[in-house]
Image (cartoon, rainbow, N blue to C red; front, side, top):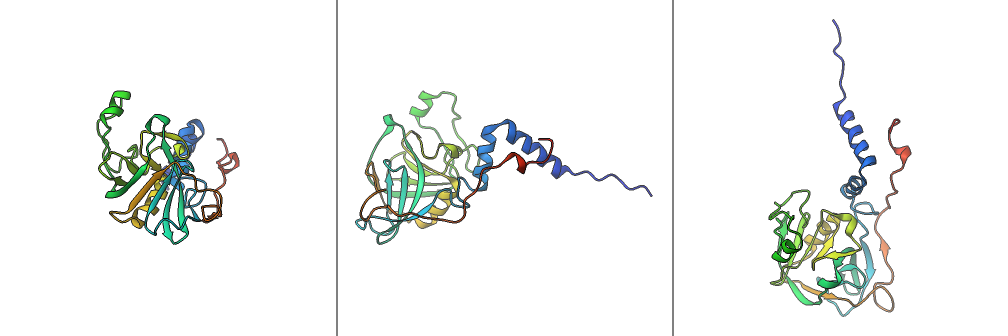
Length: 221
């Protein structure tokens, strides 16, 4: 009886994916995002920090100056997350509340977004890998602003949004169950990363990822 040749389709698919990784830098960024969203395993830069005692537990403080979002976990302590902040022309600040929470929210561009970029889709369903809101969204007051995930993780830490607070998907997944409806949200340009009771002593979370090297790939790539 002749044995039938065995095909290794999963291996072929893996090799094809690695080829795309080498030839398309954006795909490489997406791969790192899928594994964790940043340079800390399962955390994407999340840290536990000392924080100002004037903010009560359960509140959110967004510092555009620090480019961090702080969730006040206890008196004098917060969880700090890296964020993308608004462009200069879209700056704002103030105090608001969380009025809604959505899992895999759909996305509809505002008229201003469409006017600026007519090529934008008119609607993106929730859960789509190219949904700009990512996997979770917290809605702020009656405004169009959100704290949300992203389909562009390489923008975290930059000033690119049109007013929303953008997070790694891994981080918004961590933040989402911690936040209650009605929670106070302070958005400010005040900085908290130095001095006194502020966020001056971060404690990193978990081991850190190293960058992929050529030696990690199969021979022939």
